[in-house]
Image (cartoon, rainbow, N blue to C red):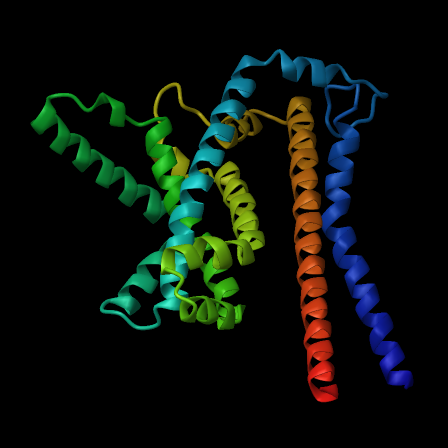
Amino acid sequence: MAKQQNLSWFLKAALILGLVFLYIPLVVLVIYSFNDSKLVTVWGGFSTKWYAKLLDNDQILDAAWLSLRIAVSASLAAVVLGTLAGYALARIKRFRGSTLFAGMVSAPMVMPDVITGLSMLLLIMQVQTLLKGIFGNADWLGNGFFTIFLGHTTLCMAYITVLIRARLSELDQSLEEAAMDLGARPLKIFFVITLPLIAPAIASGFLLGITLSLDDLVITSFLSGPGSSTLPQVIFSRVKLGLDPQMNVLATIIIGIVGTLVILLNWYVMRQTTRREREAAEAERQEKLAMEQALHH
């Protein structure tokens, strides 16, 4: 009993220390975003002037808007492709080339970003050359929004595929099999039964894709061009010249947005889980009542 109590206290202390180690720097960063001094390590009083200056900084705002557009569009595309790939790997156990397909889907996760960015750049250059030879113009494929979008979609799709595949592997297929026995078509089964069950995993994958896209620097550096600098690129170039209080403000805003999205997602997942548990309990109760009535008759 004493050993269990000691282990419990040790685990609690380790958890608290881990949380402190992770979140204290974030708390300090948020506090110093309201610092009046230009020196980010010296407290000069409370002020919101850096928030006003950030809102007047066109370079950062343009980069943030570009990053947000790329993140949302790449995440949406990755969710569609990742859901289809995860469904194929989870439901179609064996098909010709399944092992190669699974390896190619998961390759961007384990491949260094430098290799992924370089390979995407070489591919796009080859496609540009091919299209110029056919149509005489391929400026729309020039390094910018579209090329970064392709790179981020490739990266995010790998993670979302693993997430969707794991969720589908945990699901009980009895509902899908019962629907097939009743004559439902596979497409209707997917949209009516499977898709609602994996909706929390899809939402998680979408947020994960946005996070990965907003965080990426290496792949973006290979695929971006003049006038298409994303937020990580602007932050990295600014930090090399010295710490800027506006970076604290920008990080605080990002923390607030991401924290809100995480809270909303957790609320949605918990709500869906509670609803499924309630429906399962109600179905079990109805089944017991039907059995008791059958025994009485």
